[in-house]
Amino acid sequence: MTHFFPEPADASERALLDRVAQWDGARDLADFTPELLVELMRREGSDFATALLHHRIVASEEHGPFLRALREPEGSGAARSGSIHVEDNVSHERPVVAIVPGAFYRENPRTGADGQFVREVAERLGLPVVTAPLSSTGRLAENAQLLVEWLATQRARPLVLVSVSKGGSDLKVALQRPDAGAAFAHVRGWINLCGILDGTPMAEWLLSSDWLARANRFVYRIRGRSLDFLEDMQRRPGSPLAGPLVLPPHLRTIHVVGFPLLAHLRNGLVRRCHARLAPFGPNDGSLLLSDVIRWHGQLCPVWGADHYLRPSEDVRPLLAALLGGFLA
Image (cartoon, rainbow, N blue to C red; front, side, top):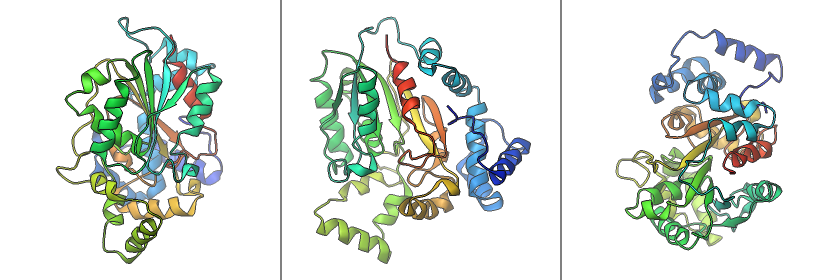
């Protein structure tokens, strides 16, 4: 697995990684404020800021041991005996994998928002898979309620939740509900795939008066697709995603996040989204990478992947290793 310890793809990438290795600035993740990362983007370029943050996460005491365990042969076994473990008071029955899908997962599954590749990996591991019946365009409070009510009906076996993009937003808001303790009591773990947990500047732009944003809204409207949920995805005080991520003590959480260089952005839409977010710092095309280092849980920074986890290296072995860590 080279997601975390990449080999340079060419001379340009080798030179970039050498620059990162020689940089003598901030080393602790806490020092990587949004302001510092924006300044690095301005002075050194997007690729340098992205590569430096990736390197610092991999080298950190908080996440490095976990990532090195995943690099070992049979990474799922290393994870099972290392950083991921099941508490003694939790059932050792093999869990059900529950996909928490992203926006438009019914209307546009080609984005991967339906979690089809999660289903394929889970079935290969012999694990049952279900999909939480959320609204594909639901507001966060609406989907959080649906998720909590659905979890109450799924108590026969322990669950591992795997959320995709906006599914992570819905799940974060569900965890803020007063009934979250009971609802998540039988949830063994959460694998968050590129979840937008703090909102995104893309929501503000899509709701703006910019002519292209208005055109986008018009296209969605004539296709009968609601964008009301974007109101909840804004980065502003008082928004549903404004608060910190709060996890129950028993809930083992892993965040899988893409760290793409500009050369890795092979999709035109993702390139445009990445450029639109560049004034806010390094990003994956939807979420700001400065957010992720403050999330509770383990980080898996996937080198070369965009927001839809489309890297040059298949992420299925990584997901298999992560799911394997939750098996008894």
